[in-house]
Length: 321
Image (tube, rainbow, N blue to C red; front, side):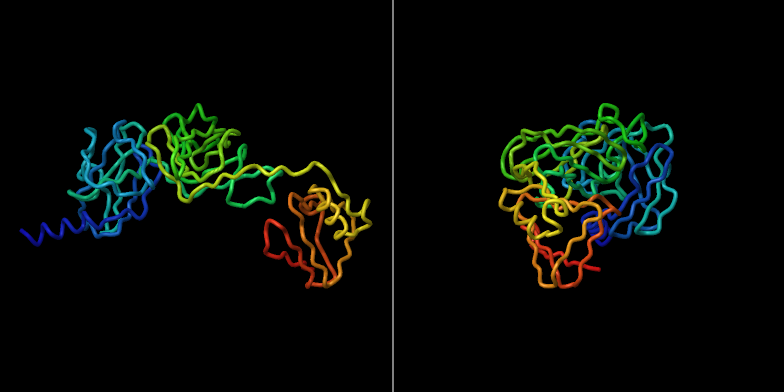
């Protein structure tokens, strides 16, 4: 019996979940793909996750190791539809309520908490116009934080296909300082199955934070990457009209903006900007160069050698025909 016991232990120790269906409702199928061969007849156990199983985890797909299963479970003879060694298809019982489910694919294997727990893919910051020159990965107080993934919000027992207000989904967002400090809850503006929109509090202090999300059924799930919060950069409310005030001399308009401490350099509709092949333009700090909008302002120049530099983004923008 030793060789069999040793092989079983190796499967349990080395198996990791590569992918699983998410979200899944009652009477729907779960497809789970793992790194180890579980054979043609895996002993799948699927359980409803009760409140004491809700916990923060680095990722929703983490193997948690052996834990005591909740009392409401279904075994392989009731739920397994097919298996090919590395993938298993099984069904959530139709009479079960929608909720977070955990499963394991063999006796002695670790439990997976991936079904109907948030699976966060990434997040992005929608910065206000006053921060267009700031670090693209940084955020400031008052910015919008959009989180994208799967199973982020449930509404009336189903994953919310349309955007819902937060009081209808029960989804929450919080920030955990990477150093020390208490969790900071971030107000959620709207949520759906695949995205959450939250607003960073005006009182948040600069620093680095882990982003964590939970839906009405799950514990806290940590998103990838660290959110860096910096102080807001306010751009002066003054305009420099390139055609009207500077007769098309973009260099002069940028120099005036630099001398004034920043503002908006406006390329008006119909304005013709003449640049020499050797011109090197630098966008000053706290300065925005703006046209009339998409399709209305088209940059053009007499030479592809002309480059545009920004104080915030040192990579040159080449002027193309």
